[in-house]
Structures are given as structure tokens and as C-alpha cells.
Length: 88
Image (cartoon, rainbow, N blue to C red; front, side, top):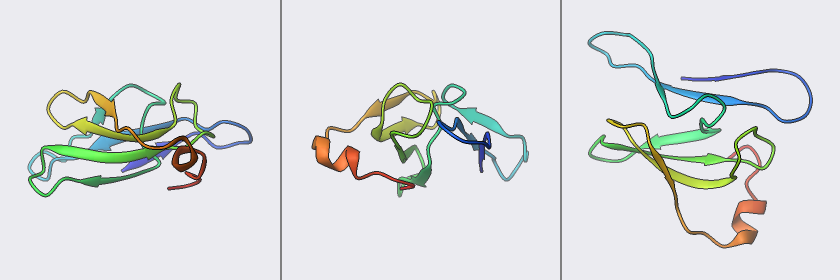
């Protein structure tokens, strides 16, 4: 599930994980540092996602977040790839 603030300009995305056994939403990472588009790893332990230059996040690019800790690390990609990230 993703939640974002509407309006013009930069938009803050928050990403949440919702376990099927509890249906209690847990934020993945910090507020406004969520992903525009995200996918689980095959083993379910990580989430890969994108943050665009139009988000409130301090960094745009591709990131991998650990499901247990919520900590996201950037994936090294060429600068032109980051500039090409618009809505995923």
C-alpha cells in the first residue's frame, strides 16, 4: 500500500507493509521516504523500489529496503537512469 500527499510540487510517499495475519500496517522506512513503485524480492525479505526526483525524499533513485529493519540502501545506477525515473 502506498500513501501520498496530494497537491502540486514535490509529493511525499510513505510505503507500508501489511502482514496478512494481522492486517496491521507497518511503515517501511521514514515518512516521505517511501517508494513510488515497489516489488518484493522472491524470498520476501527485501523490497526494491524507486524514488523520483519529484518526491520529498532527499535522494532519488533505486533502493532496496530490508523488510525487518525498514532500512533502505541505494542501488548504484547511472545518473541518467535516475533522471529517467518518472512515476517508476
